Length: 399
Image (cartoon, rainbow, N blue to C red; front, side, top):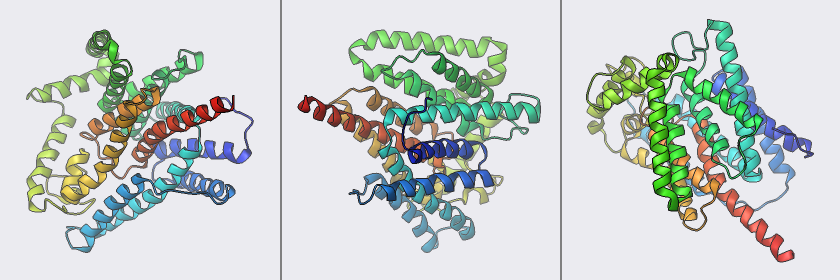
């Protein structure tokens, strides 16, 4: 990422965002992560004040997320939570997330979208290098998954997969030495993490991008995608290194989908889903309280590993609809722009949002700030195109 001659505050804000992103995914719940979050939010406030009085419309995404947080607290106030202390603890996190959402939205709206994508790629690549290096030093292996792992393999790998998509799904020439280096590092991170969710995120986003970007080449793109997918699948199964890291987990996933037995992780997830569905009818509309799934007998003090089940159990139908209305709003907004302008960024936002819908079947993410920033960036990908078009129109009129 090249440094440009820009005001010091802008450069500091960009690097504070990159620092926060690395800390959020690697040093979560540590003093480093707290410092990075405070630094980013503080510099964002300073930037906001430095711009003076500006007109701000309340974005729909604020309202939708605010309604979700309100439903979470209604659940507590009305006595639906089966363990109020746990719900209040996570409720505080959601309020902090709302404040983060407001400031992060402001940051991405004042940042050039192409620069924002490059910052995201830079931050994720730097974080991946650090994670693999530290894992090697502490465990003697690059494997980020397992009892010896010191990082959250899921969030790291999903971020890496999205960053790869930001590089590949672009109108600019992406096969530069720097981009190839980033793709290599990010791909290794996805492999060493051993998480299927990263593969799902990358595949869905890239497939949606190539199908929607050039619908007139649908047959050609479909054949290419199928051949590529089959090649990747057999590589994961036949190459011993890839099979050990990720292939066996992908094979297990398909076995479970076919009704056969999978690995312990996949079978545990299936059991948690059944457990959540068993208790859901007892309070279908407002649920049993956020952060309370872990209290169930058979949950073993952990979460459900499925965002849909976790939300349906925790905040019921109302809370689940409130949360996913935020995703749906961004998706519908992107589709509306797509039929007017099939720009790379608009198509990319559609792919990322759809992949988030799928990933949430195997990940509890409603309290993660990483997911919030991905949703905000998707929104910025759409609005950034609108600003670029308006700027081009003004330039053409002057000329």
